[in-house]
Length: 215
Image 1 (cartoon, rainbow, N blue to C red):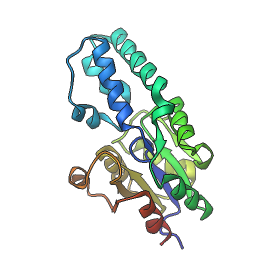
Image 2 (tube, helix red, strand yellow; image 1 turned 180 degrees about the vertical axis):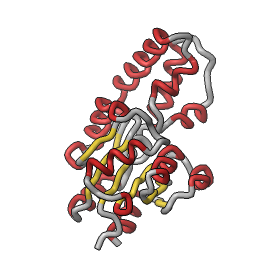
Image 3 (cartoon, one colour; image 1 turned 90 degrees about the vertical axis):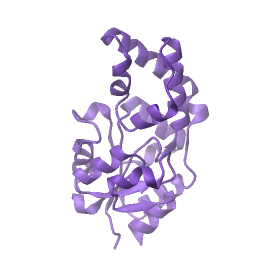
Image 4 (cartoon, rainbow, N blue to C red; image 1 turned 120 degrees about the vertical axis):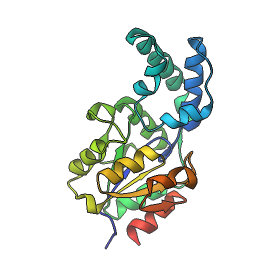
């Protein structure tokens, strides 16, 4: 019997290699508004949380924030399909989980149009049963609400569920929701960065998810 009946995946940095474009889009936005340049680490720290919240501290008012969001998204969309791909091994892993009858969901702080765009670029659109995006919850990761919602959508229990993600936000949300947590070390963060979140499992490659779930 599989160890888990359902697997939830984060999107950026877990299923799709989009981190470089995300960081570039932040730099582009700051340059467009004449704001002081920030190091990559600032933007990496916000990955996994809603874009509006990441940009809000730098905006004078809501109108400026809306403009910053528009500039970011225009740049990101313009380069998205040429830059974004599934991480090596992700497609094979997802297909094998599906073939084994494992239920799959994506839990992301990205909006639904952006999530669907990323899944299309990775060739994963038809593989995911449920999506929990920024519009679907009141409290984003690291709050447990997105994970709780995905568990409910799939009709499974927390004990049957594994949440695979690359960030502290993912691991904290999963732990709060009392699901198994798998730290994806193929993303932008290493073991030392993720260790404080005490994940249930360390995953060096997407294929490790198969070994963990299916045995």
